[in-house]
Image 1: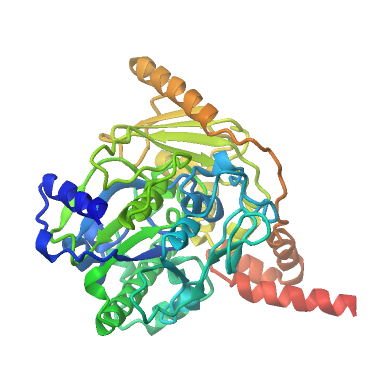
Image 2: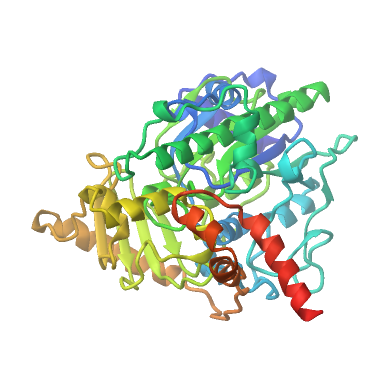
Length: 499
């Protein structure tokens, strides 16, 4: 366990109080809590109007990272990168829900394969959370449970839900579904003892101060509070089983919040996620770290904590290593359902650079699935038509995107002023161009195979327009009519036509 002790020493040298004598010589259990579609919009990150006491406590007793970014603002490419520790474009997994029947090329492997090889039991899900937390959603051939050899066997995990009763260390990936856009948002809010007050939320300056927008934001925070409660149940269960003290808990988002400029876009709300690491036996302080962290670094860190050498092919590095240093986080946006895109980004602590290769594809591309789940977009489209949006609010609805974007994150954290055309920033812009070109070359996959899953939301939206126009009108006025509800109705209608 020399390698584990060195990590503890590293934390100590950073000025964090570590109780060396309290560290168990056993390898730690590791739980990866992955909340869907969230930014750092929880109380300990300064979000107003929301209460997240469990996560607050984890941050107080662990590490809170202020600058963690996913490699893609959409779930399946982002998850593909995290499952392998490799930026998704390098493994040809960048297109949403594509290449599901293509095995990973050598030498790439899911990191759970390496954990299992080292003696860890890998668990998927937890019985105490919505949907049992079993979502995987990666863009290469895989199965949830079973062995892995990458050729004939493609299992990622050993078992569902159940923690081993013996002394075997375990890794558990638990998906916190409630924060994902879904038909349950209204029900969660209705059952809450203290629903978030829409009048008390603080909206970003690029969102219109409108009742529909405020209510939508409040409902998002309601899901955060429910999710925080779920984490509390998981922690209590660990304590009752005597596992809490030697369990590392890592809390993240799979991509940014599902709202304007968020999920699907390379703006900060699409890429920026929370990252909290708590280990009662190993980390005894509420330290805050400001260095740039990529989501693939989390994958590498999990292996490092387990005493496993991080493979050279990984694009992530362990942030528990004393040589950890990341100047930029690289982000990419490609296919999302029926909307083909190609945009790339580099984020440093000071600047964000975005290159839009398809500027003709607008941010508000009227993607079918999103039409069901973006009340704020519908409300603000209407306000734009009425001439009631200011320049910052209307920017998202521009008919085209600029070819290049450059933002000063220190002075413009909401990315409102594009400096790409400012002569005072020519040198900085050129530096980012050079860096992006080199990074893109390094992240090129050996294969360009492209087999996307057809987005049925396109057909469902068209069907709603013509068969349920009253519901479609409600949608245009900012009401979430229920994607799953109308998916079920659509399937029933199609089945009747067949018969």
